[in-house]
Amino acid sequence: MTEKQRKRLLTFFKLIISVALIYFIFTKIQLEDVLTTLKTSNPFYLIMTLLLVVFSKIMASFRLNLYFHQLEIPLTQKSNLKLYLLGMFYNLFLPGGIGGDAYKGYVINKKYEVKTKRVISVLVLDRLSGMLLLFLYACILAILMNNDFLNSFKWIFVSSIPLSIITFWFLNKRFFDYVLPVFWKSIGYSSLVQISQLVAIVFILKALTIKAATVAYLLVFLVSSIVSVLPLTIGGIGSRELTFLYGAEWLSLDTDASVSISFVFFLITALISLIGIYYHFKKPKLEVY
Image 1 (tube, one colour):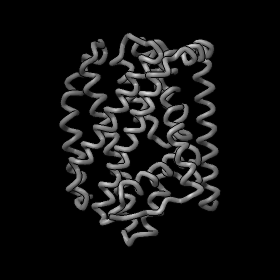
Image 2 (cartoon, helix red, strand yellow):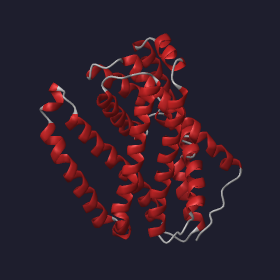
Image 3 (spheres, one colour):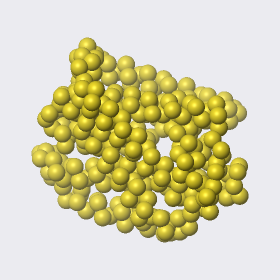
């Protein structure tokens, strides 16, 4: 089996999993109630959500450019943002065949004399930096929640916060010392990315007039964001909604409302990612300082 055939087969399986998960989710919720909730949503809060998600993506592109600069690739923020948007489009709409991270790595490696291993490393570290903050904020919210099951594990959540930061710093120092100087800056950008997305979820809750259990919904969102990073479905479709569904059942939340939150966030992210189609047809020129 050729590499091209393998990628097509992988994409096919991801599509099957996505469709199966979406179908399963719809058998567990009242679709009419979800659609009614979406139709009656407040447009002002949805616009605010859109702006916050845009801001989070800009901050994420800045974080990635930190790593590029450490590899002596002095991309301008504007050029890097264009490349980042194109990567978002590929990740969501053209998965399997040419993923966004793979494309960014290919373009950078082709244009600049940088070791392929180092380019791949910074792309992975960029993702891990984001996941670290997702984990940290999830621990903080789990500590703040008054849940009988979670209460017995609060000491684990508390100890996991410094332990995870120290572990990630040690891994950077041991294996990726060439980007260690931007470790704390990357953490700072990651914190801005995740905070802005958490506030975006708060606005979605307001848009859907969901007033109760805000912390619980935010916790489910963070867990779903971690799950959606796993390359199991097309652009995370289905896996995020499934996490919201079971998270809602586990924390005694409204399942219809929970899935509605997930759908709204996905649609807004997809809308922003669609901007990248422009750079698919007109490839961005990588300008340097």
